[in-house]
Amino acid sequence: MKQTIIFNKELIKRYNLYGPRYTSYPPANRFDEQFGIKDYCQVVTDSNEYLLPKPLSLYIHLPFCNTVCFYCACNKVVTANRNRARPYLDDLHKEINLQGPMFDKDRPVNQLHWGGGTPTFISHEQITSLMNVIKSNFTLLDDDSGDYSIEIDPREIKEETISLLRNIGFNRISIGVQDFNPNVQKAVNREQTYEKTLNVFNEARKHGFHSINVDLIYGLPKQSARTFCNTISKIVEMNPDRIAIYNYAHLPDLFKTQRQINEDELPGPNEKLEILGESIESLKDAGYIYIGMDHFAKPDDELAIAQRKGNLHRNFQGYSTNANCDVIGFGVTAISKIGNSYSQNIRTLEGYHKALEKNNIPVMRGYKLTDDDELRREVITQLICHFQIDFHEIEDLFKIDFKEYFSKELQILKDMEKDELVKVNDNNIEVLPTGRFLIRNICSAFDVFLNRDDNVRNFSKMI
Ligand SMILES: C[S@@+](CC[C@H](N)C(=O)[O-])C[C@H]1O[C@@H](n2cnc3c(N)ncnc32)[C@H](O)[C@@H]1O
Ligand code: SF4
Image (cartoon, rainbow, N blue to C red):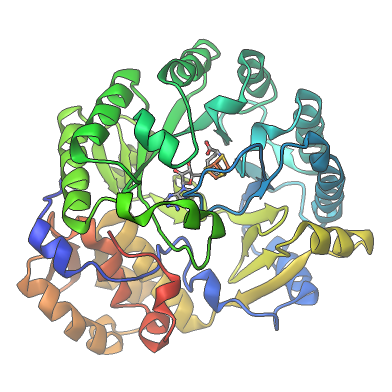
């Protein structure tokens, strides 16, 4: 498979609609309270009894941040008081201790991710004891072959923290940068020097982390194509293995702190497209490959290799090479994906505490996929990960006739075919280089919920 893209401004403008990012299908706004603790326990029991039980992927949510970045849309609790983490960590330990015995010990943890908020808000002691609780409840791989990653905010980290993280088993880090320009940093209340960031890179390399990812955001206030390209070239010099360039999702009705952003300072739609187009060109020139949906990687990175081999996957943590895992999410707001179900934990620290005080699994809502949902999830995942879908493969898996089952969807794709975003052949759909940047739009043709919904504005714009 050729991993090329064509950036066509006119088409991108025309297709720039609201839509989900498909880290799950159906998206989380379809989960409901009918799915509770009992259902969760049942799907876990069932998942242990499969002929070939799936390996596990653990997600640990650490919501605290010392200061707030105005643009932030993450699930976080902003506080300068480090003591606030203590009771939360007690609850988190309790949750892990409750859930650990529910899963068979012969299910290895192939993937582990600590996200936030800012996971390194907590002390060295707290980091170590959290990892120990995880290790005593689950079977972590002890040969450094797992995908064990953590999100790092360079403003929040000491040199010794990096070596500690490596020593306790992490082998990947994801570094939040967003933008190096001082005016942009001021406008979003995130002042982070180039030197500090470089220092994290150097330390991570020194301690043998397998892979470094960097997060950037385009569309922030005071950004221009010229200033953002400056940031990109500084990042390229640092030589990360993966780069994520997220589109700034400005939803001030949902995220209060975004109201502190001066909307007059946001780049307009044309400037935003300019920023994106030039960023893509710079990354292509620097040898990065477009994996899909905001993500770039070096050609020899595992993600790029998996995409070429056809075994890339996507879950709440983004793209992954671990296709077959059941995902267990720990902590407030964390989402699990077990068998044919999704479930989400309680959102507030208080509610989470109350549930655990009663020794309850803190599940708040969830969703059990129907056969139709599972089929559509597979089609959407294949398109997002591999930019193509093979009809026979889907027909064998789901015992359907693809063209008959999806006749309406194939009709929707006709306009996209005219615009050369996709090509529908006798036995497959190919996403063409011009369509790769519009993959969310192409997937949305197969999303029965999006078209039924009157609340698409809960989603960010595609670009
Ligand atoms: C939990 S944060 C990363 C860890 C750490 N707290 C930090 O900021 O460095 C995850 C990432 O989400 C992205 N992000 C947050 N808010 C966003 C928004 N409104 N639109 C797009 N991306 C956003 C940022 O790139 C950020 O690095
Ligand atoms: S971007 Fe990171 S540090 Fe900033 S508020 Fe969000 S989670 Fe916290």
